Amino acid sequence: MNTPPHPDTPSKAEGPTGVAVAGLARQVDDLNRRLDALGPVNGRVDELTQVVAELSQTLATVAARRRPAPAPSWLLAPTESEKVAALLDELAGWLRLVFLRYPDGAGVVPECWAWHADVVEELLWLMHAWCAAYQGPDASVQLAGDWHDRQRPGVVNRLRKSVGSCSIERHQTRPGWGAPPGAPPTVPGEQHASLITAWWADGREQAPPEPASTAAAGAGPIGGALG
Image (cartoon, rainbow, N blue to C red; front, side, top):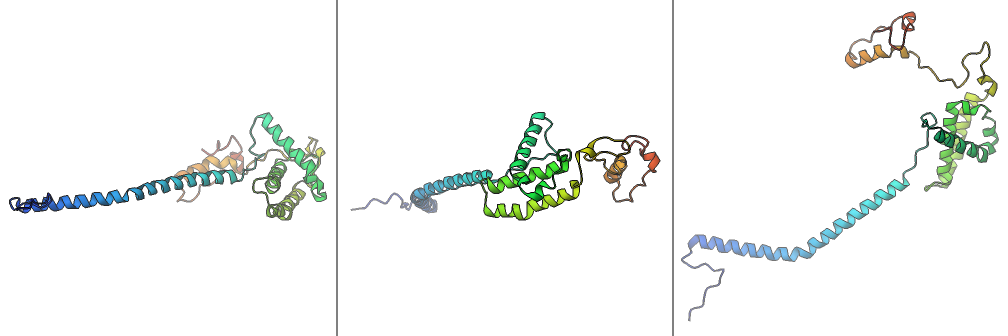
């Protein structure tokens, strides 16, 4: 009795082409079986990908929460009076409760301290450093120690040098006095701005331009006598 050929077995009539097709069919069948076996693995990879994505999001959220908040700046404070008043009120309360408890601190804060923008700036950041050391999410003994050993003494020393001898009377206009302390500063040589701009923008590889005389430079607005 003749046994029927296997479906994958090419007949002699099919020739070389039939043999190639049958071999390709076996390879495809083998690949299908392998892919079926990898099904659970692919599912596991998808699960791990999702877990990694969730962990990344969690870490980003935690990092954002732990990122130190910047201290506000008095020099760049907003122009809204309510916000300025809030900054000054908060600072005055902290000075009374904390900074002025230290004798050397009380000795360097004159009655005119609020007239000195640099002094307010120093005290603002020192207040926020104290808040971070004692009340922030990362408050620690190390931060508190750094505040006592380095930050507070540094501010005290700078205030002693800058306003240690100042008084409220010195901010009053009197005959023979110059500009009162705390007046907005002027930038030396600012009148040469346009001359420097033209040189640095177009010819910085060349020698710098010669400035105008002092009399000519002061004859008009910034850069007006230099054009």
